Length: 74
Image (tube, one colour):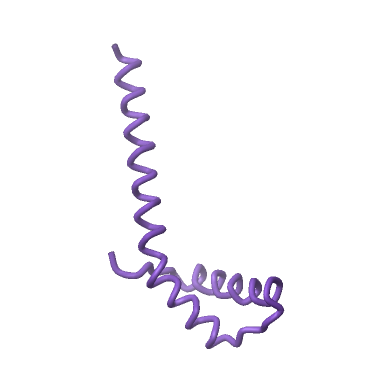
């Protein structure tokens, strides 16, 4: 899987959150370019692992629900 893509609204919200985190937790202000570079890095390097975990979790959840359904039908 390539890096995770966000629509413009999601991207801008995530960018605001990254910049807010730096101000609140690190008492550092990130410029818009710095924030974008950091967010792009995180989406590229960490995003696929989060995406894959979400898919795995959903597969497990659906498999359990299907098993429940078959058990109910017996």
